[in-house]
Length: 113
Image (tube, rainbow, N blue to C red; front, side, top):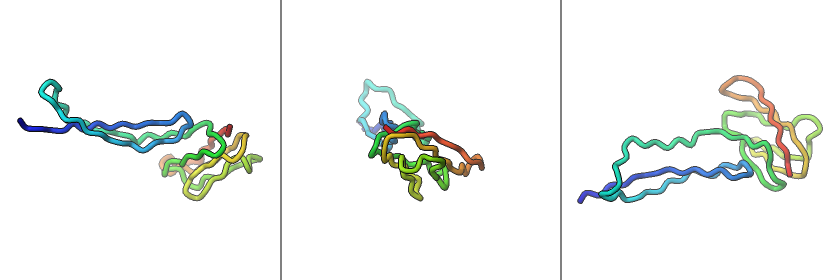
């Protein structure tokens, strides 16, 4: 009997809005299971959380360049040059980024709890 593998992809998103890496697992196909062909896993969605917790962080997707904190929100979050946003204390931060694909500035409001 010829053995084949069916590869399935799974993606998990935490409630805090942090993307977990896409993982895959394989299962051996038995005679009772139908054969699956042309299966593609697409985990290329983008999610910017509306809130994070103090001490947690997330990364802006690579299409967003030059993230910076605006207004009186200094000290609520920190943003580094790689696009990593870390919650420092309770409050709300306004973050502006340059969207490379749409060629415009976008504004995000992030609450920190």
